[in-house]
Length: 564
Image (cartoon, rainbow, N blue to C red):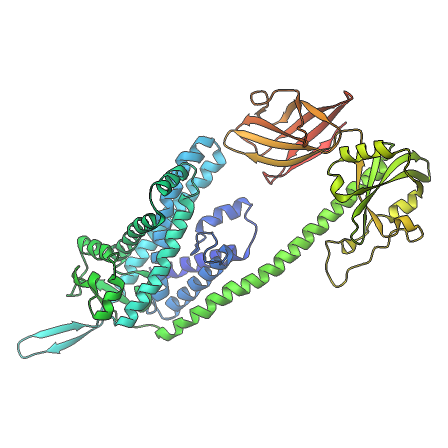
C-alpha cells in the first residue's frame, strides 16, 4: 500500500498542477484526464482566489505531502491524511450532484458522447472514493495514541495525553475554514440547478435569511463532523495536529456518541465553553481528543504552507495578468487584421452605393463619411458627409442623412493609391493600443480634409446589412438574434443546409425586423453543435439577399456570410 499511495498521489498532484496551469480544456484527452483533477475549490473561485490558484496550491500541497510520506518511509502522514479525508468527502458529495445532473439533463439529451464522458467521470469518482477511503484506513493504522504508563504495586495504569486548548482552538478555526469551503461549493452547485432554484426561492420567501443560515449551518456542520469523525476518527485539522477523537479509554467511538458530539457543536456558546474547561461537546458526549505519537517532521515546518499559499495565489495572479494581457493583445491584433481584411474586400467591391466611414487618429466629435459618386480606373469621386457621433447608429441613418443633403455636399477626388494610404498598417497605430512604442498615423498629409483620417468601415447603403447579435441554445431550441443596420427588410425564409433544425414551428414568415432593427429566429432540434443555415431577406424594394450562417466551436459564435 505504501508504493500505491506514493505513486498514485504523485499522479494526482501532477494532474492538479497541470490543470492549475493550463487554460485549454477542449480536447478529448484533457476531458478524460480532468476526472482525476483534485482541487480544494472544486473548480470555482472562492474567497477571491481563482480556481486555477486553488488548483496549483492543491497540487503543491499534495506533492509535498507525498514526498514527505515517501522519504520518511510512512512516518510523516499529516498532509496525506488531511487531503485524502477532504477529497473523500468532496467526491462523495459531488457524486450525488453528478447523478442528479445525469438523470435530469444528460439522460434526456440522448447524446452518446455525453453518456460516455459521464460514465467515465463517475467511474473515476467511485474509484477515487475507494482509494481515499482505503488509504485513510491504512494511514490511520500507522498512528497510535501517545501515552505514559504508571506502574503501581498491584496494577498498571495507562494515561493518554489530552490536546491542549491552543490546539483545540486551531481545530475550531481550521475545520471551520474547510467546512465553509465544502459547504460553499455544494450550495454553489445546488443553487444553480434549474429544478432546485424555485425551491430555494420559495424557502427564501417563507423564512428569514438568519433562519435559513442557521438551519443549513446545523445540517452541514453536523454532517461534516459526523462524516469525518465516524469514518476517520478525526477532522482535517486533527490530522494536521496528529490528534484523535476517542472515548476516555482511548477506544473507537460508537456512532451515537459521534452524532451527539456533532449536534452539540451547534449549541450556543459551545465554542466558548473550552475557555472555562467545559468543552461541552466532549463532556456530554463522553468523548475526548488525545494526542497521537509524533514520528515524522516537526510541526513547525508546516507553517511554511502559509507563505506557500500566498505565493501560489499571488504568483499565479501575476503571471495570469501577463498572460491575459498577452491574450488580449493577440485577440485585439487578430480582430484588427480581420477588420482590415474586411475593409480591403469592401474597397475592391466599391460601387455607387458604397460609403466609407472615416475615423480620426485623435478624438473628434463628428464622423466623416465618404459616399462614392463616380468611379474611374485611377480615381474615385466622393461626397463628404459629416455627422455627429450620436446622430447615427446604423447604415439606414447614414442613408437618410445623405438623401437630405446630397445636393449641397462637397465633393472630393481620391486616387486609389491614396485610398490605400488611408488604411492603418499596424495595430500599434490604433487608439486601442497604449504601449510606449505606439506608432503615429498621419493619413493623407497633403490633403487638409483627410489628414489623420483612416478608414474605419465600408458600408453598403440602400440595402440590408445583417449581423448576428447573439446565439443561445436550450435543450430543444436554437435562438439566433439578427440585427439589420441597413434598409428596412424582412426575413422571408430560413432553410437548414446541415443539421436537423425545424424553423416552421416557432416562426411565421415573412418576419419583419423591428424598428430597432432586430429579429429573433427560433429553431427546434436536438443537436446544435454543427449546423449550416440559409437565410433569405427581402428589402423594401423587393430585392432579395441570401446569407449563410454556420456554427463554430464556440456555441455563442457563428459565421455569417452574404452569398448574393
